[in-house]
Length: 332
Image (cartoon, rainbow, N blue to C red; front, side, top):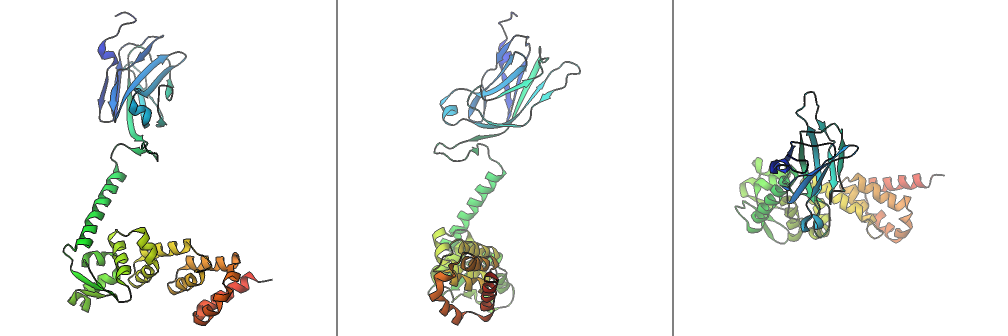
């Protein structure tokens, strides 16, 4: 075979799953080789080998509309091996790069890799940026994606169960209306509900729960949270009622969520109310935030008119904490 000739098989890349393998039968000291295109993911790829001071191996996508508009972010490992006795394979570090052209990635190896050798490239992941912007995401299903899809499917099922009353087996009486729900779902979300249905209580016998300290809308928001279908605006609107329900029915994650939300928008018009709620439901972070807002940031002067009413109605223990905070701040 002459120097400029090579067999068709000498440029062919075999692929299986996410692994591509290029077997080079003959590579001289002053040679450039490029493989045939091979498909991994949604892109056609090339491997190339060139010899100057070192042997450089490049991996790059075929120029196309897809590779131009949505170039791949490839995470991969390269391995070069030779059948020569005593020759150890060269294995690259794990690379993760945005690859647009042959200039974006080159791996230099020992120039003694001449003659016959094999290049393996294993793609650990391939990511793509959405056309409308945003973070790159994998084109291959993974555990996180599977979990996400499974969660979405579960939420759709729960939403249908709640909205359509599919096999609903418990009635909830609110202050201004009636709702239908499922004992199993309620019991799994709250130890208080579980106890109602586990022991010989009136709720178990009648399959009815009275939640008359909540309106129909706020109780619907509570069920929306339990079933995973609550909308942000409904949570925001009913969060004080949800906080009370979370405390009453021992739904710890909802209680934490309400505290975090209430802490996020403290202002002069609500800080005293928030302080009262924090004391009532033992929300230490919210209480700390309210006291810091009032005293560390000096906003106590903005609520002087409201303080009289607060002092008349607040619990003695809470007032004692407020006075202790005053003494700490104003300590000479």
